[in-house]
Image (cartoon, rainbow, N blue to C red):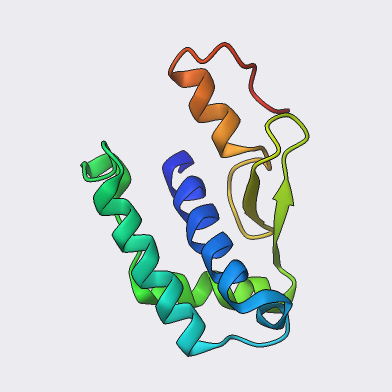
Length: 115
């Protein structure tokens, strides 16, 4: 879902920022756990992320995302429009587009959705 793409992007950007390019070569459990804890701390602080629409990822989800990143089946892309980095995977069912531009369009931010 759209909200899952936002959460995956947040979690994997934290993971990459903490672990650097090494996380593209192997899954680092300690780094993943730190990113996972930070992700949940952020969720608690962001208004609206506690509802059913924003079901939280568990550590198994985090491991799967990190494994996809390591294997090259997923990557962090930069949006040409808003310059946000977002997670995208060959295994996702939705088309590859920036979830942040899409979210901004939903709330009347005036920005058009990324194509």
